[in-house]
Each structure stands twice: as structure tokens, then as C-alpha cells.
Length: 206
Ligand SMILES: CC(C)(COP(=O)(O)OP(=O)(O)OC[C@H]1O[C@@H](n2cnc3c(N)ncnc32)[C@H](O)[C@@H]1OP(=O)(O)O)[C@@H](O)C(=O)NCCC(=O)NCCS
Image (cartoon, rainbow, N blue to C red; front, top):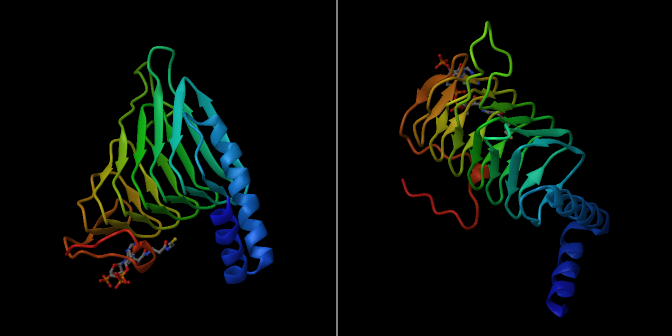
């Protein structure tokens, strides 16, 4: 208890009372939000997060950050549960939407910018064909630039960067930079690591 109080006072002196209170409120809101998830976690919600969950489970690990107006949809079927997983210290930008009908797995320290869409499904299909769904996997330490769309079946390797405004339709190799519509490789295998992604506990091995 004493340690927590000390930690809190140190934070207040570092960031100022107003910011510290805002952050405390954000963590309280986030932790309450996590009660809708598979298990409670210590997460930060800077604003409203809309959740649509039916025959699906959402998991968000500690220190995940949700910016305002994020929308999470995890809607499976009675015989097939959908899964949405967000790893530790990842951050989901303003108005970003994640739609899981089968599985969307986001690793640790992934930074998803604002106005992105990640979907493993189509929703609308032509004719009588069943809706296509393919899992989306985003590995650790990936940066997804603003206004990007990640479509079904895509696997993004660790430390990759998706440029702003990209539509990603195919797998992205680890340590590569892709951009455009459809996204293509700008730089391959050059260990590109954007600065905000360098996390105290991350060792970047080139
Ligand atoms: C992809 C990105 C990381 C590349 O940055 P960079 O390594 O400095 O690359 P450059 O600006 O030198 O551009 C290299 C080439 O890629 C092109 N390019 C860069 N970003 C692009 C994008 N988003 N879409 C399409 N093409 C792009 C450039 O036009 C240039 O093409 P050229 O060689 O024919 O002239 C950067 O442009 C980007 O999109 N960053 C994301 C920004 C963002 O969303 N930030 C929010 C973070 S929370």
C-alpha cells in the first residue's frame, strides 16, 4: 500500500496533478470496461469504447490503451465462438474498428493508429455463398499507420510497419515496411523500428 502511494505521488510530481487525475480516471474506466472481457485487466480507456460481443470472447492484457471511440466487434455463431485478443501494452487509436468473426490476434506493444479498420470477415456476401472469414494475426511490435485497413487472412510479422492509408490484403514479412492500396513492400528486412515502438523491455536485435 505504502509503495503504491509512493508510486502515485511520484507520478503526480512527474506529470502534474491534472494529468495524473485524468490518467487515474482513464485506468478506472478501462479496468471497468475489462469486466466485459474474458478476464479483468489493468487497462487504460481515454474515452468511450463501443463493444458488440455475441458468441465471442474478447481478451485485452494489462496496459492496453484504448483511445476514444474505438469499436470492438466480436460476433461468432452459436457453434463457433469468435475471438479477439489484444496483447500487453498495445494501443488502439481513436475511432479504430476491429471486427472479429473468427479470430483477430494482436500481439504485444502493437501501435494501431487512428481511423484504422481490422477485419477477419466480409459481412456482406454476393449470392448464396457463405460469408468468408479468415483469422488476422498481428505480431509483436508492429506499427499500423493511420487510416489503414487490414483485411481478412492477413498475417503481419513482428516489427513491421504499415504506412498511412494502406489497404493490406496480403501477408507482411517481419521487419518490413509496406504501404499503398493494395499495400506493397517499400523496404524489406531492414530492421525498421519506429521510435515510439522502442519499449523499455524490448530488445531490438538487428
Ligand atoms: C510508411 C512510412 C513509415 C515510410 O516512411 P519513410 O521510411 O520515411 O519513407 P519515405 O517517406 O522516404 O518514402 C519512401 C517511398 O514510399 C512512399 N510512401 C511513403 N509512405 C507511403 C504511404 N503511406 N503510402 C504510399 N506510399 C508511401 C513515398 O512516396 C516514397 O516513394 P518514392 O520512393 O517513389 O518517392 C511513412 O510514410 C508512414 O506512412 N508512416 C505512418 C505515419 C502514421 O500513420 N503515424 C501515426 C502513428 S501513431
